[in-house]
Length: 488
Image (cartoon, rainbow, N blue to C red; front, side):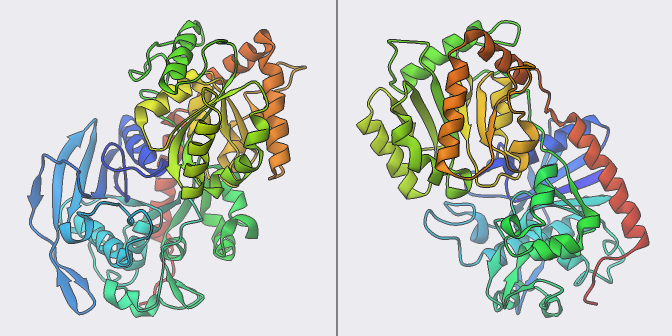
């Protein structure tokens, strides 16, 4: 099958979150299964390509016409890459906005990108199916079923739409439709209207053939008011077309026996290299080295309430009364960046914080830490807890979304389990769970059992890619039988 991925970011070109990891790894896994895959991305500032531009497109936007180009960058590791080349929209410092605000023309930017994806399919690389990701690509199914509804080349092109995070809608005022060139006929409660505004994510939910999200638990959660962000009713209406497929991880990059970014390799058969990595971590973050058995708690994350940093803020100074060290890497809300900077000053040698995203340090924290903290308010899938398992770094997580699907609570009686979970979203429960982990850490034999349990887990993309391939076939069959809502 020929599959076209449309996404706003992918490694190694652009990354703000886990979406980029998925768009790097899943296409490669599908190629290994015998499929032909192309990935379509915006060409942001700093993205280097070696390909050539194909003839420019004509993209209508309201009363205007735009003429972006598409760059064919060839095949890399089995996957073909195309880029939308429009410097006016995408040659900017940020991907979605500057540090403080989203770009005011994001509706126009990503509608152009979605329309260009359809034109790519029509003129350059015709797929059997388009796989769209998050609100930035949601106009692909909307436009296919409206503006292109009579186009014999693409009108029956099936679309699978993946929700990576229900918290991000792509919400814009009504008049953005005219500027972006979105058909007015879809602005109604059964279409993309959302309390008087334009909701891109809703368009993807309503007009795609099948919906997926990135864990089975999250597929259930987004049908509730707590996690549906106002769109739970739409999700419930389409529940028969919703599938939860757990994200995989790329063990060629994230496995301590292969990792070129850590100072010593190791595996479940020989953990000696993990001690070398811990010493390197202590040096890198200027943490105390007087007692190498002192537990190190690692964090690699976007600093946001969604990730549980409000809980961490409530308990961190009480937590630091324990004999622990902390190594933190990430960026996000300013108040949390300032909190970690202050903690590093107030607890010299005990807290080390790098307020930036640094891939090398992310690998070092995974390899050198003893415990990994991920107390998310909600977490569609999460990748770092899965990385932590492979690195023998025991996760402490809240039982939500993919965290609940991937981490098993340790059971001392049976010697089973891979980490520690809590359910109630409270600082007290987080602190209690960390202390429980620290209690077991004090017993070397028990702790090694937990480490080995996690290191033996396999969350590679092989199984997930096979599930996607089956879903693609179902989407093709459904498109041949029944149309999704159309405004024509």
